[in-house]
Length: 120
Image (cartoon, rainbow, N blue to C red; front, side, top):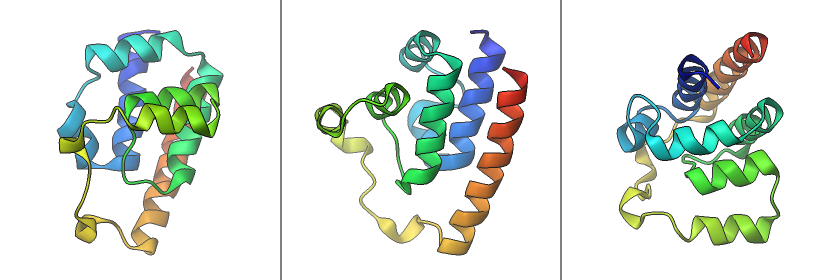
């Protein structure tokens, strides 16, 4: 996987999760994310991004993303979630998007995901 492809995936995640994602993980993929993303197939990445969009969650951790990519069982996802850094958890819901804004953001993410699929 090229750095440009990693950047495209990162852009998709930023579209889905907004500034909280890039604030926590940076504007470009950090080494941990880069290493794990390179281990995944195109189909696995598409699967995980689809689940990010459909989950309605305001956040995704690296273990959750990998679990979604590999379609690992719910119990494994719960185990992965417990390793999240509590300082990065979103506790104030005031910033969450309304349903209309969230739907528009999902539509934009799906459009950008289709562009990414075409490139890969």
